[in-house]
Length: 566
Ligand code: NAP
Image 1: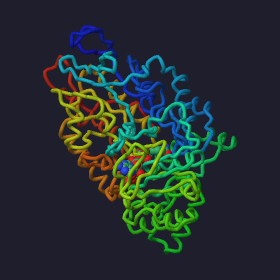
Image 2 (image 1 turned 180 degrees about the vertical axis):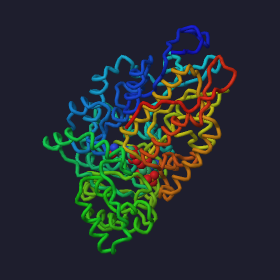
Image 3 (image 1 turned 90 degrees about the vertical axis):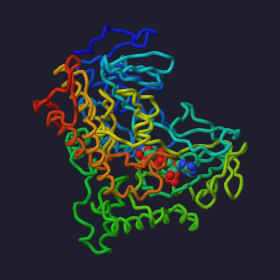
Image 4 (image 1 turned 30 degrees about the vertical axis):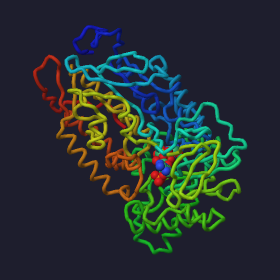
């Protein structure tokens, strides 16, 4: 390894011992585990810092009742090891949180990753030292470590968001954020419970709590389109069948525009009469979970007129599940919200829960939350008393988890300050100008999470290997390449319906004061992968690579080898 020319364990700040690694990974979730594996396979010394007391990332933290995958289990596991695919049995079609957490622990053990992971360690800051070409990381408690490469794998939905209601500190009952659920379930028996939030998390947790608490009050600001998950245990025969054709399943995931084994109907909805289209939606509705909407005419997802028709079809499905027509109307999304403008939640018994006597809805657009009181929540109408308040209020998506670490790049520039000013600004979604040797192992597109996380980790590893082979100490995207990428990223986002949503983590508009900008790359996983590998194939296009001993940038030519093939 052409390590920066500094003496090992040199203490750059003059106050104690420092551990030195080739790479520091932050986070031991789906991305971080595989990133650690890849970098180790490439022969690097790696330390992975993880804030949680266990591995599994979001599947460690999100242990609230009802938490489950919204991708089918057979598409969620890693694809890189056939042995792993054959050894692991999924239990449900949409794996429940305890099983997914167990799976990721199984992966950590099987690939002997634990020696490289330091748990219960929150990274506070990472500072780039230009002369030595190293990142120095400080964690809670004062421990420091240094590495040539900083590879955050912190997830795009991991910085919980809690609204700052007036009087929050006054409430005398228990308060939980769904994404920081205690390891031991709270006792809901006989309790009056409030859930604030009615999106993916709120829809999963509410029906489960309704079964066990005395009364559940759901606070809704925006009604979204919940689709039945139809979750069920997996028939052993189905499991065997998956195991016999995982290669084919993964090929479909890599090729389909949906990033799933289910491709959309390639025909345009406009080729059919309205009656035929409705029959087509009805037919698709019989399929399981997300196949209901992924298998329909492709242009329902891109054509506003067709989308409005399909959205009305879904409103009818919601109305049919709720006995009280007035309540049903409140649960139905507004006509101004296209289907797919917000991430589509899968639900199990959410709408049906409102048919129970112990469940009620507060529409906070009609009666806004004014403050929290000692006893509960005061709206413009009245005070609601609770024993427990649960925030299912989402995340500061994509930029949030990285901005909560004080990352200082070249010339002391703060990543948070950069993104606060400009919104998400990256080159290829994986690097950022002004932050040398920072490789962001985050899946930032609308694609299958794990398969995409795999090629990102492989791309990063390939980049690092290339630098080591060619004795480069420093890489950084050029401001011009980043500006062009940001423009392209924005253009792609503008072609979607995302901009139609008032509040959405796709736009950052769910976070008060956050600069509005598309936070996800609105392209398929394969298209994004092509862009990233294209940059490598064209000789690390858009990057400046430098050797410490050199005076300036080096022309890398176009001789890069790309060993990874899908
Ligand atoms: P979210 O989609 O951002 O929804 C947050 C909810 O809290 C919304 O209903 C929002 O209302 C409400 N809310 C926020 N601030 C509020 C306020 N001040 N007053 C009243 N209501 C407020 O967050 P999420 O449900 O946690 O889901 C986030 C993402 O995580 C999902 O899109 C999905 O990608 C992922 N997720 C996946 C699963 C899964 O099934 N695997 C489960 C959970 C989450 P508005 O709608 O009006 O903003």
